[in-house]
Length: 147
Length: 127
Image (cartoon, rainbow over all chains, first blue to last red; front, side, top):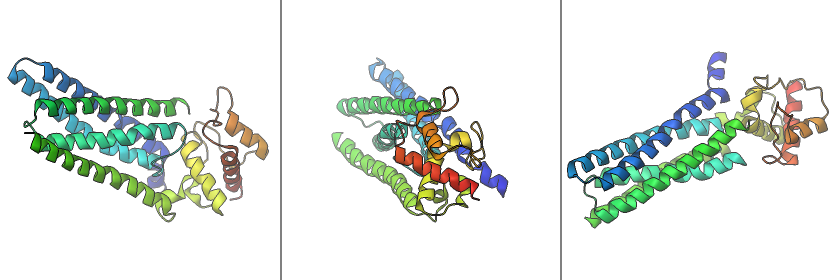
C-alpha cells in the first residue's frame, strides 16, 4: 500500500508530465510544417500526401495532449491556474490545448472538403497553436530549471 | 463548400469548449472538495490541523515537494521534519533561497505564503 502511495507521488507525475508533453509539442509543430509545405506543393497528389500527414500528426498531437494535460493536473494537485511561472505556463497551455482540440475536430469533420480560404485560416490557426504550445513548453522548462 | 466549413467550425468550438471546460471544471471541483485525494496535498496530511496548516500543505505540494519530497522527508532537498532554525530564518530561506542549493521564491510567494509554509513545516515536527 505504501508502495502504491509513493508510486503516484509528485515525483511520479513530474516524470510522466515531463515525458508526455514533448509529444504534442513536437507533433503540433510537425503538423503545421507538413500542412505549410502541402499548401505550396505544386502537384495534387503530393499536396494530398502532405495534407494527410499534417492531419494525422495533428490527430496524434491532440491525443497526446490529453495524457500531458492530465499528468500536469495531477502534478499540480488539480490547480489549473497556479501562480508565478506556473501561471504563465497555464496561460499558454489552456488556449493551445483548446485550439488543438478545436482544430482536430474541424479537420475531422471537413476532411478534404476545404476551400482555399478555409484552409488558409486553418494554417494560421495551426501555426498559432504551434507557437502557443511551444511557449507553454518553454515556461514548463523554466519551472524545471528554476527548481 | 464554405457551408460545411462553418458548420464544422461551430461543432469544433463546441467540442473544444466541452473538453477544456470538462478539464477545468473537474479541476475546480477537485480543488474545492477537500475530501478528494488532492485536498490532502503534501505530507499525506495526517498532521494537518487547522486551515493554515492545510494551506501550507497545499503551498508545499506546489512549490517544495519536488525537492523536499511529497512527505517532506527529503529528496534533493533536506528532510523538513526537524528543522532547527527559527521561523524567521526559515521564511528568509524560502524567500531568498540558498545560493547554489535552493532557489529563491520571493517572486512566486508572498511573506504571508512563507509564514504559512513555516506553520506547515512546524506541524510536521509535532507529529
